[in-house]
Length: 492
Image 1 (cartoon, rainbow, N blue to C red):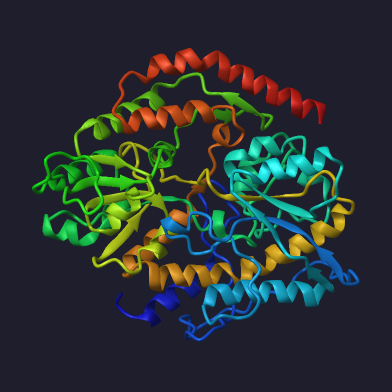
Image 2 (cartoon, rainbow, N blue to C red):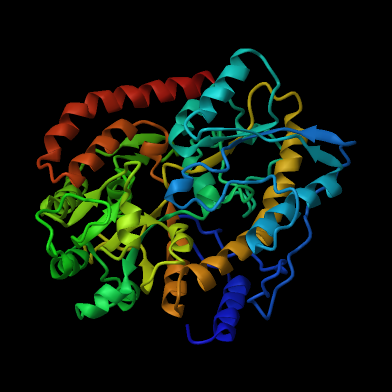
C-alpha cells in the first residue's frame, strides 16, 4: 500500500460520487461516519452520515425478538462472527463496536430493548420459523434464514412490500437483491439488510497467492481486470505454470501435504460461484418481471465445458471439507494459486505468510461485457414471520437498524477489508469492482434450478463431461418447479 492518506481520499471520493452497480443503478458506497474503538480511524476526511429521514417512534420499552444464526457457525473455517449482534459491551475491535453501537442506538432512539437473541444452525433457521408459524406462535418479530432456503420462506413469512415502514426503495435495503428478487411489482419475502454482515460482505471473488505469481513470473491480474481481459483462459494458463506434485506421490489432498494446486476450496459453492460469475443463468425474467426458463443454453454449456476442462486436469482444482482439512487451509498454507471464495475471506487471510490479493470472478471470455459477483448461497436474509402481531412496528425498527448499519457499519467493514484484509491499493480497486458488480442468480435463490445447479457445479469440479444431456433430462423438472412457484405466488 502506497500510503493511507491516498487511499482515504480515494474512498472519500467514492462516497461522494457513489459506485454504480452493473446490476442495480442505485447501489453506491455508503457514507463514512466516525470509526470507534482502540484502533485509529483510517479515513482522515470522513463524511458525516445523514440523519434517519423517517419518523422516529417511541415503542415504550418493547422487547424486540430476533432469530439469528449461531455465533460460532463454521468457526473452524475462520469465521469472524460476522453475524453476531449481541455484544454486551465494546471490545475495542472496530467492527464489533460498530455493531454494538447500532444495537444501543436502536434501543435508545426507538425506546426498545432487545430480547436475548435465539440462535440456531444456519440450515435449521427456516425450519424453526416454519415450526412457530405452523403453531400460530408470535415468537419472533424478525428472523434470519439462509439464502439457499429463500424459497422456503414463501408461505411462512410476510411479503415485505406489504409492510409500509420498510422502505425497500432506500439504499440500506440492498438494491441489487431487491431488484433481482422482486417478482412482478410486489413479491419479496426476504431482503439483504445492513444489520447482519454475513451476506453483504461476501460476494463471490477469487483470492490469489501473489508471492507464487511472482515466483513463476506470472502477470498480477489487476490490469487484466481493468482492461476486461481477466478470463477463464487467463486463469487456466496461470494454473499450468504452478501445478506441481512437489515430491508428493499424487494430488490427493493431505494435511501437511506438499503438492501445489491450481485452486483449493471447500465445497461445491466454489465452482457454482465460478459459473454464476459469468452471468449466464438458467432462469431470467420476462417483460412482466416474472421468472422464465432460458431457452437457448448454448452459452451456459460453453461455460460448463471450459470449467470442467480446467478441473479435469490432475491438481488443477481440489475441493475438500473434512474435520482434518478444508480447501481454504490449503490456500492459506501457500499450496494453491487460487481460492474461489467470497470477499469476506480476505479478512480471514490476514495472518498468512505470503502476499495475497483478490479479483472478481473471471469472465468466460473477453467478449463478456462485464464482471459478475454473485451473492453466495450461504448468506443471511432478513424475514418477518407471518405470525408477527405488529409488522409495522417491526418494519420501523428494522428500517432504522438497516439505515444505521448502512451508514455506520458497512464503512467500517470496508476499511477493515481494505486496510487489513488486502495489502495494496490495487486490491482496494478490485474490492470496488467486486462490490459494484454484485448480482443474484434468481433461478438458484428461488429454488427453480438449485438442485440442478448444485449437481452441475459438482460435475464441473470433477471434470464430468456432457452437461447438455443433464440439462435436457432435468428440463421438465425445472418447468414443474417454476409452475409450482407461480401457483404459490398467484395464491398469495
